[in-house]
Image 1: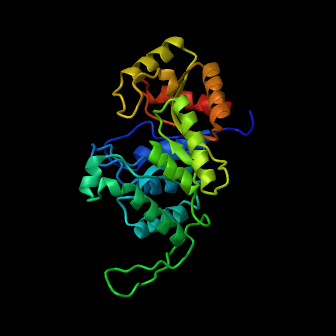
Image 2: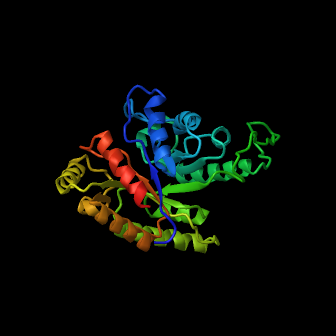
Image 3: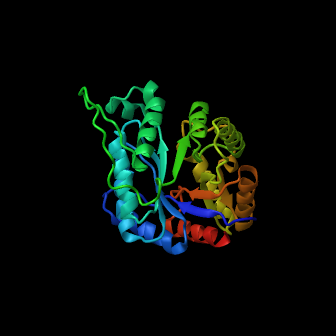
Length: 312
């Protein structure tokens, strides 16, 4: 094995009270374990566990940690004003001392697009235009903004992010059009956690092809999200696999795929070998471990995470 794999994590317990300690306590544990980064998704209009404002929650995490990086798996650009989004990211990057990794996405939830009055057919064009405006603003370029007047009013973003020219940007993508867009932008591709290894192998190859065609150098950052659980107890691993298989299936998951094709669950030797396979086939550099595993207590899951971090 070459360079050590960076192990990142999502929350393993999502409380319903919305108080900071529900997340910050977990981030502190992850930092002490040596995890590379702590990641939050974005979701709207579900229940009290929805995360409509991941950067706000990551700001609370920033205040209680000092080293662990702070990531968003899918900060949704089509529903946001690009200058306000650029400001919020810059503020979080300064607040955290330059620890932000900005995972950006387009979104798939029709109710969200309806609620924010964004035509679904426009989500990719809005995503590209907003991201371009944001990166220009982070570089300190004057941005001309019409504001419904006849004379553009150029503005300059302030404050700028600590990381120059901006925090690392990873593009979440699902489907051929999203892959083409991610590759053409030249940013690392953050894959869906429910696609099979074979599908991911094809997707990363397409991403590289699109990036090369657009004139970008090959990216050295290859992140992936996966459910990972490690235990010496064969019966426990079997129970976890059964609980995973019985959980509500994701609408975009291949329902014919075996659970070992889209998760990594087994004894330490199996998990190490499977991760090595991912690294050999995909060149994975960062493994974002999904925190919530059905049928597993927090302490049991933390024990698995601790073993995983220690093996890298």
